Image (cartoon, rainbow, N blue to C red; front, side, top):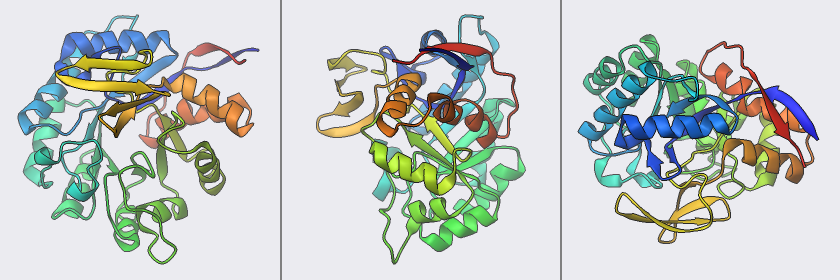
Length: 309
């Protein structure tokens, strides 16, 4: 069945087709072109935890790319800074040696380099100085998102009370849920915060995505690809940037470690519609209009033709 639905907005993309956001303008533009071909109208190029200079370089290149876009590229709506302000105990695929404590000075530098381009900044609220930095970032227009965190329920409640309304890839790289210590997961489900979820079917079991949708409602769940350099490539092992990355069942692995997704956002949503037996147009909003709501943006999204099998 062919449907016309609003184009997608992916707020968490590190790379695709062998290209990485971290390697600068030409590769960022190639990723944007590929995303546009696959239903994405807008995206947030997403950095990884690397050296501070590499992160600043990537942000400056994203700014350049946003000013030189062609009609064939998905529109750069902002920058998603994933790290380096993370909890090293929950670093996930982020290189632990480059994790830094959040400071106002570093936050100021990020905003200066971004030159007005909207920012999502993922950080762990339990990091020393994090609450001061979260308050400063929010006061200066950045969207703060909690992730890679071992925060307690109380710390999460404090963050939400400060106006933090977003959580990065819920369930992944964070303290497990326990009925006597709900932690980040329980606090997010209990709150009205927006929850990012990776929809490749590997990072989060489809049934848990269904539970999350029931708990939070379809207007508070943001579907993302968390696409890595191998997103869009066939199954196999690739050497990219000196790393050996394996694509298997829509996910990306380095050695035996799950490091991100290889599944396009549109394909993840199409799969979920089948797995969960939920109408595609209902799920689709979690990848189009809801991501915009999560960052306080309003856009008229063009329609995209989707073939549902």
